[in-house]
Length: 383
Image (cartoon, rainbow, N blue to C red; front, top):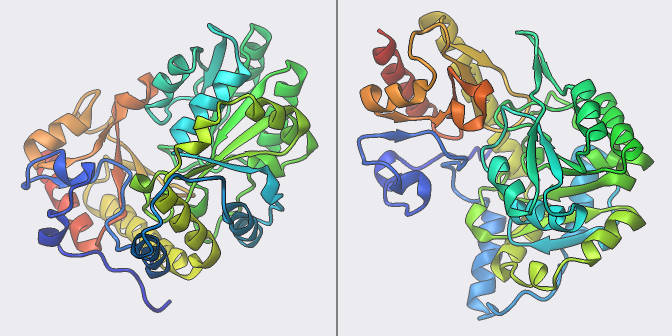
């Protein structure tokens, strides 16, 4: 594909002020947080600049054209028919999660998560007034999957909701539609709600099929609230715009109970960026996915040839790679040793739950040269 995005060199990247480039000293290669290094899609940058040049930087009043643009994007990418009227906005996916749970559960209610999972999940549930119940993913050394029996037991014991990660971070796992349908049936049987974090959905790899939770069927639409955003796919985390999608009278009614401020705090610049990304960002996104898949191939090949004790759990989505260091002797938190001795910052595996001991997460959303240097440094630690 032409116009493949190329990340700036390290000297330019280090002038950025985001968390990725300000958390560690300049001698550290930062491959920890979920930010990509590529320039913004031109159509997205142009939309944000136009918003500024028009001096239209006031309060965001409603979803604008986001619902309509998202409907087109969801149909093109996943074959999902979304009613634009079912799309509401807020600042980010974490707010979608917290504010959806606030109206779906009572104080102290148990909420299921499926570790190893995105570390803020452990904090977002208490913020919403709930109590975390862990039902870890099943892992047979080849495949990870939802423990549907365990989730059913948690619902039977009183859990009022599950916080689903789909695609699942840190594994890049795309849950199969039959598992999603079974989860919807379990939730319906126990009058529970499924809040599905689908922030990485735009980054599903070209050879993989993806079914959004609300597209599984009527039961999923009855019990589900979906969180979407352009922030990960188009590198817009700081733009502060995310989507709440509800597709049944029950879940619409829940979202109707949210305070008006939940939507009012959305960034008007982020809304403009989101409209542009979903309307006209496909070519750029496909080019980025080509780079990501190429970097994963590079990573896979390097590990097999030079670092065979490190096992890659190849993701089906996103630019995050879950690495198993348990055979290397680096202990429960290999990221700590790699940072100290190799000056590469990975995301600590134990932060994703006890199931992450001996693992680390690596971000391949960068130039191949940066990834190659990071792997050389990791190899020096293991040597």
